[in-house]
Image (cartoon, rainbow, N blue to C red):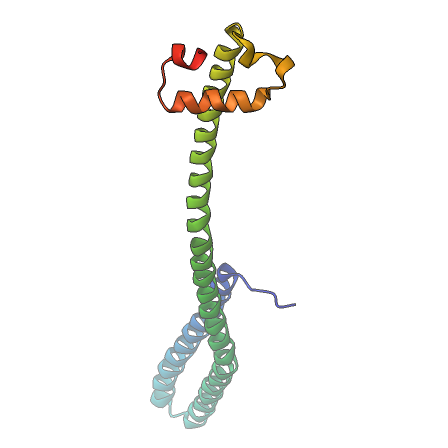
Length: 172
C-alpha cells in the first residue's frame, strides 16, 4: 500500500534542512572569521605553526560541511521530487473530481425538474379526479352494471380534458 506524504510535511522537512544548512554555514563563516583574525594576530607574533593548524582545522571544517551537504542533497532532491509528484496527484484528483461532479450536477438538476413536473402533473390529475368524483354519474354509459372499466373511463375523461373540451361536453 502506497502512502502519500503530505505536502506540508515535505515543506516542513525542507525548511528544517535549510535551517540546519544555514546554521552550519553561519558557524563556518564565523569560524573562518575567527581564524582569519587569529591568523593576523599570530602573524604579528610570528606563530606560523598555529596558523597552519588552524588552517587545517578550517579545511577540515569546510570538508565536513561539504560532506554533510553532499549527504543532505539527495534527501532534499528526493523531498522536492516527492512534493512535485504529490502536487501533480492533487491536481489530477481535482480534475477528475470536477469531471465527475459536472455531469452529476446536471443530472441532479434534470431529476429535480422532472420531479417538479411529475408533482405538478399528479396535482392536476388529483384535481381532475376530484372533479369527476364530485359530479353524479349520468346515464347508462357510466353504469358499473354494464361493465365499463372505471380506469379506462377516467383516462378518456382526461384525454378529453387535454383536447380542451369544455366540462359540459366531457360530462355528456
